[in-house]
Length: 344
Ligand code: SF4
Ligand code: MG
Image (tube, rainbow, N blue to C red; front, side, top):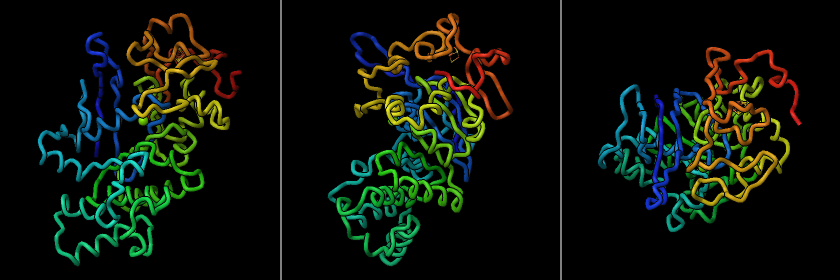
């Protein structure tokens, strides 16, 4: 349905100093009906930029976004609206994304009127109830006249999902959409999304810093580091036979909340960039204004070789649908590269 082909996003910061953020480099992926691709990486790795590019909220500097094989365009209001009726984005913070002054009824009616041109009162009412039932907010009359602050975090996120579904999209882009919820609620929302994906054949992009959740929920996983996809494959291959040292680090650190917190970026400054105060054995998160030369992961890579600092890593195919970018993959007999042992 939706495809990113070699999408690159560079944008200027500190114009006077002529600095550029290299947010995304030659990133490609395809979203298919009824399938989920998880985009996994720490804060500031370019995941949100990638999602915004797919939503056409961010113009790529290079590469293209294709909808059913044709270049997607959102130039002008009509094109933007037409695109939004097919590709919807759900954000992390249901508090921030739902206008607190409006009741659920209004929040859901708007997209129905605007995009689906539903005006008949009875038809509207029927659709509103249907939407709430689809996200399991029942009975609907309990929720239609509620304000966002009267709902729990999980209920608010269900309303946000219902609002996205109101336009009957073919693609759902979810940016960290369960990361602000209690752990006990996350699974419920993921199960709901899985049901919607399967029953309504939605194509989904699931953005997360939690590779364990991605493994549970996604069909394929793309691991991002410093604006680049460093590994791509089926969820099973990437989590059972991780090929890139960064993916292994993510998997190794999953049970340890402290390290996970570090990898996820200790605090989110709200601009999607990693904090600049984080320190760890593995060094600082990448600076995308001055990305490291060679392999962008080399300053933090426990297995880095001298050449890694100067030479871009090769893309190596492990199977037809599993690849990674790391020079060690060209040396299959190398002891240092044995994913059955855990480096300390
Ligand atoms: Fe580490 Fe070198 Fe592989 Fe990059 S190319 S992940 S620095 S070993
Ligand atoms: Mg983000």
